[in-house]
Image (tube, rainbow, N blue to C red; front, side):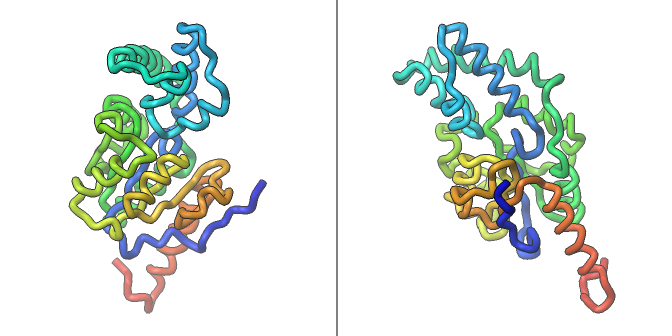
Length: 239
């Protein structure tokens, strides 16, 4: 395993907000979307390659079937295939979606520290709402942006720049937690500091990220140590 290229802490002292991706970041649900895509593709006599599936992680449904069919689909065909995938994902999600270890704890700690919390995800809004309810964090979320409702999804910067506009903050005042390359690129292009957590996120392709780690556990531990230091007598940050 490649050693984690991680800085000592996820210092958000100068940040007013934290923005979290959903699939793969807060809830492990990419496996559900993949299973639904594969099932629908087989209805058309097609088998998506591992390379194609991996290339579209974090990018929503836009574009993957164009590449699979080897041509640009009409808007009607896009809606047809996307609707089939969403219906299948709806059926499978409750039993297959699981929390990402450490992610909810970190989000709650940041919220309790007074950070504004937003969600920016490629998932449909209904799936975002269901996942937040499953995690028990709906009341901690101030802003939710679904890239599925936008003309451009990740890795374009629009999803995160839209989130920023709703928060009415400069990019320097918010940090983004991501688990995929398209999502990280989208946030980086929008001007955010990116904190990346996920298997394989420590390779050179992700060097643009402020912090790279294999899991959220190190983020949580770093935040815990930082808060303990802040609460020590003489540090001037006691509450």
